[in-house]
Amino acid sequence: MTPLTWLCCQNARDLSSIDGNRVRAGALIRSDNLDQLDDVGLAAVQAAGISRIVDLRSTWECETYPSPFAKDERWLNVPLTDATDPDVATWDLFEQYRVLIDDYPYRFASAIAAIAAAPPGCVLVTCHAGKDRTGLVIALTSTYSAYLTRQSPLTTPQPPSPHQPAPSPNSPHRTPKPCSGFCGTSRVSTTERRPTYCRQG
Image 1 (cartoon, rainbow, N blue to C red):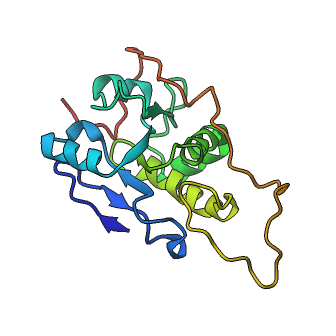
Image 2 (image 1 turned 30 degrees about the vertical axis):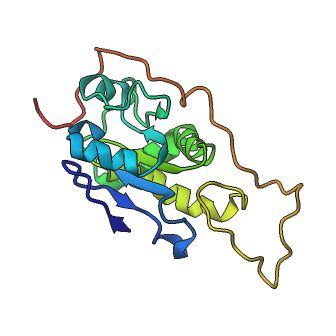
Image 3 (image 1 turned 180 degrees about the horizontal axis):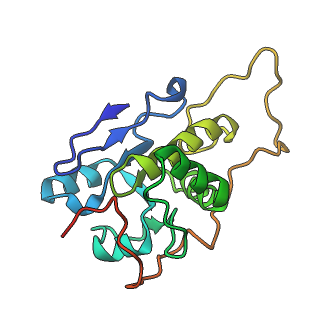
């Protein structure tokens, strides 16, 4: 991963070096909360050629710490957590991850679909700290990238294996389409509890 200099963001990284360079440089970036960006940082984001911002934060977070791109058509809120979820904040981190993935796989599917179906350009995946939720989605996306079509906006064309024929046009592995339930504008709620990972104030 290549760290990026987005002033006031501490965890912005280009992911072109993961997965054997399957992901093209400038195609997929992960970061922490964009509401921290100053004018210089915002200019750096604009210069990156972002075509889709996949914001994984809850609706409460998006209301309390609004993204500077919230009214931009490139921004999509695909929350991985919901106010009605059991509170597992005191659990071991591994168990928190397990519950998220095992109990809510459709949320992760929606996030990956939003990445795969993005317009040509760079996709930015972000959450509060750019580590846990973003890390899970990026890990799953990296794993799934082997099955994305060669026309995917994220992947570098890979030569067919000499032991395996090239995929046919009728291959079942196709770029997924966004799930309408999670890829639209977020609902705004003032009743959600304050997540423990959110900064105070």
